[in-house]
Amino acid sequence: MVTEPKSPLVLLSGLAADARIFTPQKVAFPQLNCPRWLVPERSESLNDYTRRLAATLDSEPCFIGGASFGGIVALHLAEHVDAKAVILIGSIISPSELPLYARCARPFRFLVPVIPIRLLQFLIRPLTIRIVRRHAPIVYGFASQFRDSDPVVFKWSLSRILDWSIAPNVSCPVFHLHGDRDWILPLRYTSADRIVAGGGHLLSLTHPDEVNSYIRQIVSQLTSPSAAADDSNEPGQDG
Image 1 (cartoon, rainbow, N blue to C red):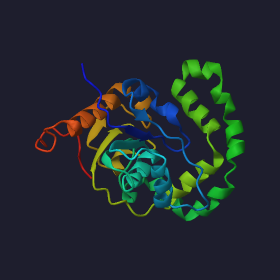
Image 2: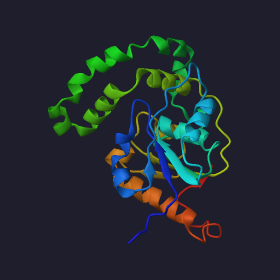
Image 3: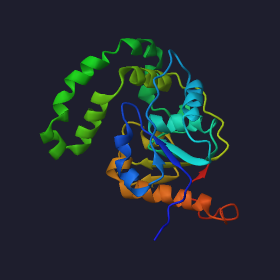
Image 4: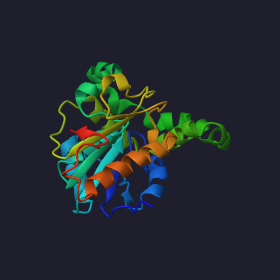
């Protein structure tokens, strides 16, 4: 039986998502912390935002990671906390890995403030009814999280994705898990350490066993007394 380490595990949800995306991981990892998104200050940079976020976390060494946009934030957060590793789940490691549609949208990022988020949240409500939950739980889950998301946080996050131009200098190892059927952040634009066959963008929900196993392997490896001496069985690579 595997004994979970005491080092905290911090996972950040993606754009228009919340801690519900990591429900299977909460069951597997009692030490998991999924912090709520802070309300960003006007035009706040990723670096300034993650500095504020770091101040809300315990100062002890931890494993941090995230899904999609949460992975990007985790990379920047690693500059402000004592991170043992960064774990990317369906995310990317640098702006050069953004898909073509995101790069093409950059000139139009000035339109983000006028996106009618409240109206879109109202229009998406039919996807949050019980019958959708029964027959299309992934669609229901995504719609429910978007419906409940903070428009201010959503617009800030989208703006930071579109103006992301410099990858942070991460001194700890970076591990990357990605699905081969991710249409939001397609695999062809990035280089993952481990690929989940049939996995889409919501790996933590659709393939929890693979995600949990990957996290457990990384955490166990880096908390083992022989971790520094044994690099041959790494599930990923240094960032």
